[in-house]
Every structure is written in structure tokens, then in C-alpha cells.
Length: 164
Figure 1: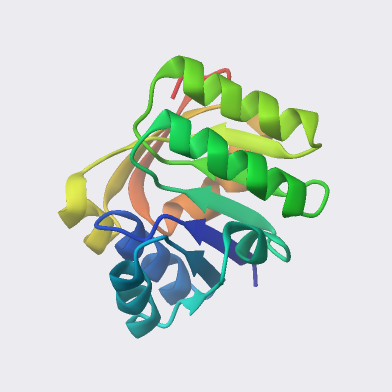
Figure 2: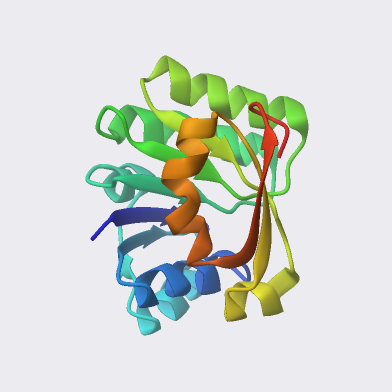
């Protein structure tokens, strides 16, 4: 069983985290919005008190956030708290420069990383039918495939970091 920290439990992230939990993973979530945390807790997601608390014991960290600046702020905190070698996946729809900055943050801290934005909307998030367009190293993509498959139907490797 994999322990997954899921940061960003809103309209997309909440159902995605729930699908990971239903697939048998331990999911520890965090969101700044109390309502999002309450909804995730009702879906059997363990709620952490901070990004660092969620990331501390995770094998994988997934983020689903509204902007590149927020992704990078969260990744700065998460990379400091995470164990060496933790895999980090960002599924937010952000600009290429921010995605590549996130990869650089992870790499500098000794973590594997992928940018994996999604298509399919809230219905796809709820039904685990999202499409993932993934950028990052091929070996990291292969390791992440079972995690992404728990949330989506189509998973496409698009090449290097930032290409997702």
C-alpha cells in the first residue's frame, strides 16, 4: 500500500484523492479551505494540519492547485518535509515555466517529479476517467502509472519535464 499526500482537495482534487483511497492507498490530504477538508474527510481521507505534515511520511505527493505560483510555494514546503526520493506529481493546469520550476525544486531536493495536468473536468475526476498528459522522466512515468490509473482512464507520456 502506498501513502499518498494529496494537496488541494477542491472540486477536482477531492474526488481524485477519494479515487486513490478507494484503490487501496492511504491518502493524507491538505487544503487551506475547511470545507474542502471536511468533504475529503467524509470520503475517508485523513486530513493533515499542514502541507509539511501531509508530505512527511508520503511515498507520493500529488498537487491539484489553481496556479503555478501556488504549486511552487507548496512544492517548496513539501520538498523540505518529504523523505528523500519521494515522487511528486502536479496535476494542476499551470504554465510551462512554473511546471519546470516545480521539477527543478523537486530535483534539487532529491525527489522524482512529473507534471501531469488533466482533462475531463469534475465528472472525470469523480468517475476516475481523467486523461493525464505527463511530462518527466520515463522511469518516473512508469512508476507513477498505477497511481495515475487509479484516477484516470488515459495516461499519455508527453516527454520531458514541462511537456505535460
